[in-house]
Each structure stands twice: as C-alpha cells, then as structure tokens.
Length: 265
Image 1 (spheres, rainbow, N blue to C red):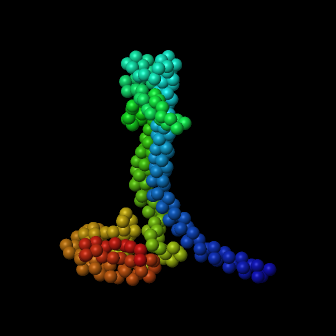
Image 2 (cartoon, helix red, strand yellow):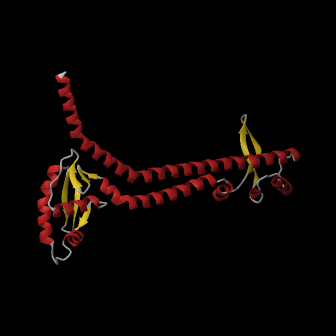
Image 3 (tube, rainbow, N blue to C red):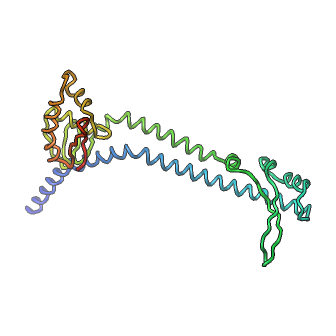
C-alpha cells in the first residue's frame, strides 16, 4: 500500500512537471493552425471550383457533340446522298437545338479506312472554340465556389490580423523558445531570465513575421531619444546571443551590419 502511494505521488509530480510543456505545445499548434488554416481551406475551395468548372465544360462538349451528331442523322435520313450542298447545310443547321451552333456548325467529308477499303464519310463539326464552349457551360457552381473561396481568404486574413495580438499573448513558439504571458520559457517549462532590454529585443524578433529586424528599427524602438545607438545595440546583441543559444536551437546572425535575423541553427 505504501508503495502504491509513493508511485502515485511520483506520477503526480511527473504530470505537474510536464504540464507546462503540454500547455505550451498546445498553444503553439493552435497558433500554427490559425495561420495555415485559411490557406488550406482556400486551396480546397479553389480545387473544388476548378474541378466543377472542368466537369461542366466537358459535359458541354459532350452535349455539343450529341447535338451536331443528331442533326447530321436527321439530314442523312432526309437526304441520303453523300453530297453536301447549300440546302444540306441549311437543313443541318435547322436541326440543331443549340442556337449558338447554328452559325458555326458544318459538315465535313472525311476519308476513313473500313475493312481494308477507303470510304468517304460525312462528319458533323461544331466549329466552336474554347470561349464558346465555356460560355455555353454552366459555371454557376464553380463561380459560387470561387466567390466563397475569395471571401473566406479575405475574411480569414482579416480575422488573423485582428487576432494577432491575442494569439501572441496566448503563446508564440519559435526554435524552442516560447513567449507566453509576457514571459519567455523553454518548451520544457523553464523560464528564461532576461534583462528588460533583452526581453524587448527578443520579443521584437519573435513577433516579427520573418524574425528579421533592421538596426534602425531596433534603435528606434529601444532607444528612440538616442542619436547614435549602434554601440549600445552591438553590446546588447553580444550579451543576448549566448542566452538564446543556450536555451534554444536559435542563433542571431548579422547581415552586413544592416540587420539582424533570428534563425534556427
């Protein structure tokens, strides 16, 4: 019984120890999902719209082929001679049910091989291009999906931009460092102790979209009243580098003295 109680206490300690890690990991994945979900849904809607458009276009092509073929069959029933005249074309076009084809459809004579012999065959031709076929096809479904996709993308981007401060406050993770409730922690739940200036600089790196900051941007934010803060910035970067590298898989790289980037090693 004593052994069971001891094991229970050990398990409870382990759960309490790992709890910050799982909470931060959950927050991290929630933030990632919020950023990628709009694009995933938008791509899905665009694929559905494209699939619907192609399907409708192919159905229209089949419908056009069926219409010209049935018109040719009616003409051959009335005029059995394999001679195409003006009256033949007029009768053929009158038998068409699709009005847009009456000005372009025609009859061609093709030579085909049948049972080893060459024969002349009348073939119905719609003579309509891509634009005509597309205009005849029913694109309402694809157009609706396209409109929904565009509205979804614009609305989602607006929502994410509006909620970005809230998402950052909930927790933002990059390279093993987590910013949560204005405090930097490792993914194991260990707090990273920083000076106020180091904290502000690391927060700027974490919240930047590309994790890259220009020297001017840093100086204007941290020392707005100081005319020349290059030496102060250099000292701050030199002191925060080992702290970041010791608690994460990140490093700070300088770009020709113009900017600094927080990158994964």
